Amino acid sequence: MMKKLAIAVVALMLLAPTLGLVTVGLVVNPTAIACLASSGLTVGNVPDSLVVTTANGETFTLNKQQLTHAATIITVGSSIDGVTRDAIQIALMAALTESTLRQLANTGAYPESGSYPNDGNGSDHDSLGLFQMRPQSGWGSIAELMEPEYQAKAFFGGPTGPNYPSPRGLLDIPGWQSMGKGEVAQAVEVSAYPDRYNNYEPVAETILTTLTRGTLAATTTPTAPASPVVDVAEASRVVFPLPEGTWVHTSDFGPRTDPLTGESAFHSGTDFAAPDGTPILAAADGVVTVAEFSGGYGGLIVIEHRLGGVTVATGYAHMWQHGIHVTVGERVVAGQHIGDVGSSGRSTGPHLHFEVRPGGTNGEAVDAAKWLNDHDAADLPEATAGAGCSALGGGL
Image 1 (cartoon, rainbow, N blue to C red):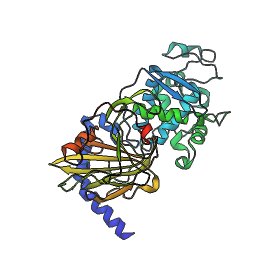
Image 2 (tube, rainbow, N blue to C red):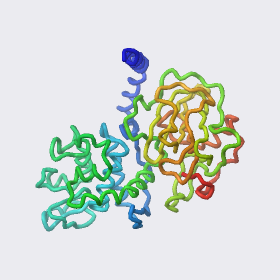
Image 3 (cartoon, rainbow, N blue to C red):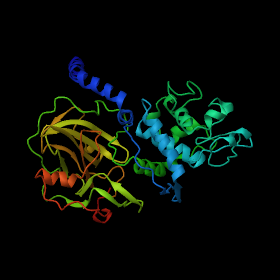
Image 4 (cartoon, helix red, strand yellow):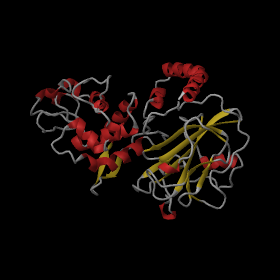
């Protein structure tokens, strides 16, 4: 115990200057706040429509307005301490179930609610808005509940929630992290039909993946900062992240047809299909900043490196939970066995989804195949608009 405490103290001393710089950055760059929040999720472009399928097999299309409300829920959640990716998925499940992501007035119960911007008129008792919250239950005034941002904040709750301490939001549910997602949604909504929420879990996952594609986010708050790591030694070489002869290049970086939805999507990494359990190798010397089992990425490792005086992060996704062999803060060397190929998260078969992010863990992804070629780590074809790789056994 004393040894761990000593290590923590030393780490804090080393990180102090960097943390100061991060604080300054937040003042001048509001977008950084979302990047450093608990979920680590940031919203990209909102598409005009999105085809989704429920757990029961029902397929329907969400329009841009509904997706904009989803983006609001994600953005609000990402700004609240303690709200993880799972928590945001639960919020989307609840809003999908209660209103199909529509900001509903209720002129039967509250005629004045129709004078606020809305997506239609609901008729569920005296409920309002995305989460069908009731003024008489203490969720807020009519004016407040007709604001999507307010409803999202109220659903997440916690000490900074507008409804704290009652009625309870998600963060106010003891042990919510160990509960089923539908069970958590029911604990907040207290619905007469508690089993409905699970039907929308795959829909919420599709929305999250589509609106936040390219985000290397964990489901829990990282045990070490996801901002640039101090004292990362200069790396001298880059190696290919899979052993020679074990892989097939199956999907490129960039626009493509999503193998799961059939919709046009942007792929933030390069996919290499390989047998389940194939060793995954660190691409260069560096320090692990993320080693978590997350949503769409499944088992996820992120490593920060210094190459040519520049910080760059590499990401390795879709490992099974038991296939992660490193921990946050661990120093690794090029070619070190850091994990095993799996097919967890949003995946169609065993493969490595490999990402490269100049600037560090939260940087914007670039073409990983080109990066490997530029560093003499592979002889891959120039990246093109790659086809989905489900036919080859490993995609997404």
